[in-house]
Image 1 (cartoon, rainbow, N blue to C red):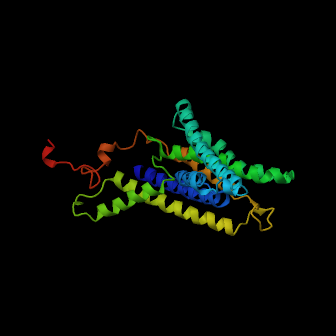
Image 2 (image 1 turned 60 degrees about the horizontal axis):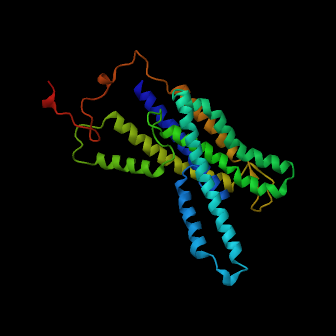
Image 3 (image 1 turned 180 degrees about the horizontal axis):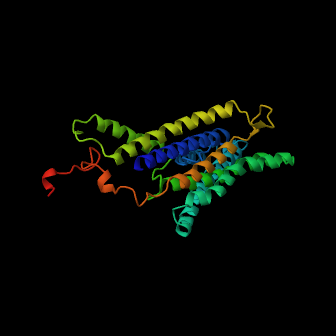
Length: 293
């Protein structure tokens, strides 16, 4: 039972990481922002501030300076809005968790989250069909805030303490560190009593998330440059696509499976005291046999 739960948890974490890498690649290539791993936006916010402070020509070149300042200000405002939208998704989920509890939170909110991601493609398509040309570019840009909100909420659901996945499914850096630490532990001469199931599960989950995020980014790049869902495509920079529709469907399926498969252990299951090994292993605490009465 415990082994099956562990495998399902790792599989769902991997799928969520795959989704995160895909969405981040789509949003970064199309609009220059990250909606999933939003810390990358901080670098671009700093660059925009630097341009405003030191990079723009001064009053001596009045024909260039206003354009430079306006562009840097627009980029700064947009990236700050994406970060705030991501955090707003986290805040909304914390409020809902207090109201709904955590048992079925994912499946309760995933219809709304999937609709937000879907809207990022649907709203521009409606504007295009209504021939709202002057507004289309701006609408296409700002609907990414809906994706950032949904991905922020998804991030928190996966990483919140006590959650069923209990691992930030979009944090490649920390999971890469955990996986490498596990590999170094396996090579340690102090590892004589084996590793606890918890340590093995954490390491496998971390490695799978890191690998899945990279695979998702590659999948997103392939979809962008071999786009089978393109409309209004004439080779310029305002081409439209339905690339976020699969992401919305995928997100819905992951969180429905999250609450449908990861049930609490049955009362008839063996107690942990009989299934956990006596020695916690290299990543846990060693039990002193002389201290056992």
